[in-house]
Amino acid sequence: AQSVTQPDIHITVSEGASLELRCNYSYGATPYLFWYVQSPGQGLQLLLKYFSGDTLVQGIKGFEAEFKRSQSSFNLRKPSVHWSDAAEYFCAVGATGTASKLTFGTGTRLQVTL
Amino acid sequence: SAVISQKPSRDICQRGTSLTIQCQVDSQVTMMFWYRQQPGQSLTLIATANQGSEATYESGFVIDKFPISRPNLTFSTLTVSNMSPEDSSIYLCSALGLGYNEQFFGPGTRLTVL
Image 1 (cartoon, each protein chain N blue to C red):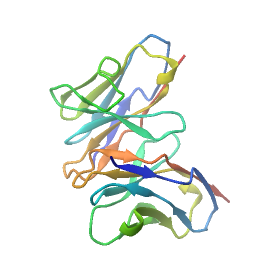
Image 2 (image 1 turned 135 degrees about the vertical axis):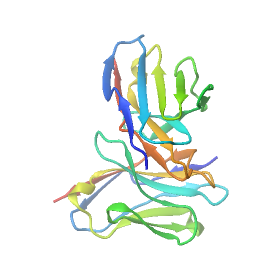
Image 3 (image 1 turned 180 degrees about the horizontal axis):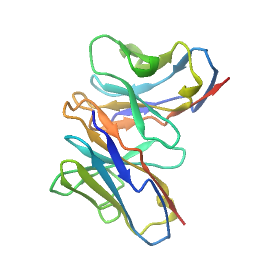
Image 4 (image 1 turned 120 degrees about the horizontal axis):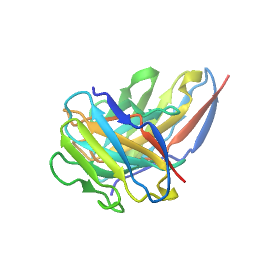
């Protein structure tokens, strides 16, 4: 069965600092990988996704993520965090070929200090 | 992309009662899903809503407790039956786009059971 681990429950960064959120997955074949963001009282918004090809994927709001098969990781990065980035971030894995059966990590809550 | 709306956005209910949550998508989608997000936790898939037939439930979820309907391609309902305080959660509807490569999420319904 597929699984996702987000080791950091809560991260605090200063505005303007760089950010990296960790995600490790377990899946037998090539997974579909996703990062979603959930702001307070909001639904989930897709930041980016990886299916195949270039292992560095660009997303919305200046986010990027790198797929590393050897490490079973798909870490999310942003070079300069804005106060509006404070939210809950979820990594998810889907079975090859579809985004239908998603398994989510436990999430990382990002706090941004001014 | 698809925009998903849910009604109600939140509700406070008494133990033993039932609540039906509605989910409407503004465009054609393929599959629709219902998730539960318990306080401080990640998303757990409850079931896949199938058009015109019984929903497909994940392990730990049963039709008697969470009856689901999907009468057409863009509308689904989830009923939380015989509620207890343990059912207090956010319930999210999602839909898989026509390319099968992205799930769109509704804003969620925040349910509190007293």
